[in-house]
Amino acid sequence: MVNPSLESPTIYAAAELDIALDMALKKHESELREMERRKQELQELSKQQRFEQSEEISTFKIIKGMRETVNVTLSDVALLEDEWVSVVPAILTVFSSLYLMENNKQFIDRGGTIRFITDITRPYIKVVQQHLDVGAEVRHLDKYTGLLFSVKDRKFCELAINADVKHISLSEPLIALWTDNSTYAEYLMSTFEILWEQAIPAAQRIEELLKDEPPNV
Image 1 (cartoon, rainbow, N blue to C red):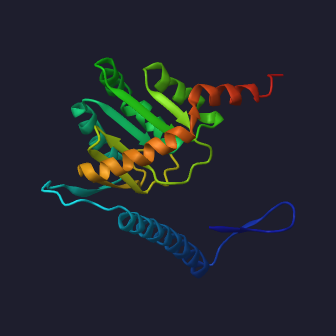
Image 2 (image 1 turned 30 degrees about the vertical axis):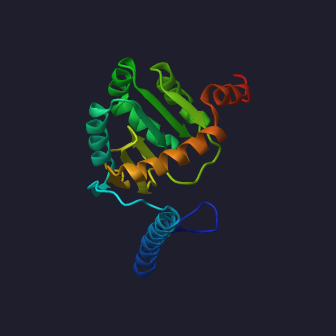
């Protein structure tokens, strides 16, 4: 960490060790506060949702890191029979394109359906088009900041706890909750359908972005 001078040319000097450590600590404290906020949101959601008594024994586990997320998703997709829906940040569509595209295509070719909602911006036009080309249905929801989740066959769920992914790397620190609880899956499916109705088709969004693109000089 360095401090720039005000004069020109700019001179950079190393920050005091105590200041540098304090800044690093504040960054981690901010991340912890964000995780606590998301935890409280989940607790509120669980209070609002009335779960019926069931003899079903469900599994809940925490997925840590992008590498484990990709591996779990690959395992789930191999068992998919009907439908996979997701609400994801645009950068995660890149991971899907890199590591899951062939599996997605095979699933769609055998009669499955993939639908996902994301915030489509100009840098992600190409990757979204790749998903459209293999038969996935994609919609755009502008600047969406709500729940990020995935539901497969109305049973297998992944709900992001911390999805602050900034780089295309399997070492990114994504944290998610995975469960095979069908009651919770139905709750997320109902949430997805509400968002799906609010979103616009990806083709329409891409057309709008290309229309606003300045001509090459």
